Amino acid sequence: MTFIKTIFTFLITLLIVTTTFAQESKHKTKILLIGTIHFETPHLDQFELKTDDFLAPKRQQELEELTGILKRTNADKVMIEKPFNQQKQIDSLYNAYSQNKYKLTVSEREQIGFRLAKKLNLKHINCIDVFYGMKHDSLVSVTAKEKNQLYLLNELSTTANNFILEIDNVSKRNSITEILKYINTKELLQKNLSLYLKYYAKIGAGENYIGAESVSDWYLRNLAIYANIITQINANDKYVILIFGQGHIPILKHLLQNNDDFELVELNSVLK
Image 1 (cartoon, one colour):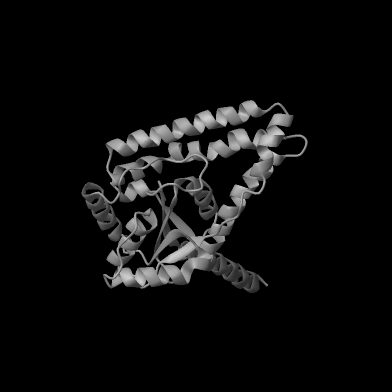
Image 2 (spheres, helix red, strand yellow; image 1 turned 90 degrees about the vertical axis):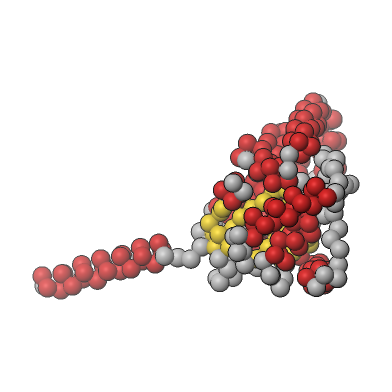
């Protein structure tokens, strides 16, 4: 009986050690999230930065330097803020660009995304965006007026405009690399997300929750983007770079941090 107990104990110990080793050695795909400003205007954003000329020689040189640094990651995939259902169109444009038959538009999706993917000798660039309309937005102002909460929208507007002014001032004085380092700090990412969580969520609370439902529209879109990300990464991918509007990054970061298939890489550790 003692011998059997010894064998049983040995097998249990072996199982624990093997399981622990398997967990420790599990491959995780490194993923670098790059929150960007939009290089071209206008867009559909309610609060929008008025950008400068990113096709100017100085900015083009900065983009070469930025993508030269990012190339050192040897990333397996580059993902951009283009709708998933436009993949064939983007494939065609990127293929033409790879053959020097297409001139990049001002969009950061191409200026950073296409340029970087070509430097990495990638055959393909991944589209991961999906657009869910903010269907509750039209009801937010109506509800705010009915519930005497218009002051929340006024505070939101003031805070958002100050936030944009802050980024605008940084953008005018710094290189593209420095701009990206700045807007991807924890503080700036939190500032963007707080616009939804601090103001919108309060509107209609306790009754119709229109504000919370409006915030849920934003989360739904980012959850759908997240779904597109994780379904386009396979077990062989060691490193992925995602280039997306800065406002999406806090939610995407949270989602990916809680998926043990991935290891998030901080942008400022790459753009030293």
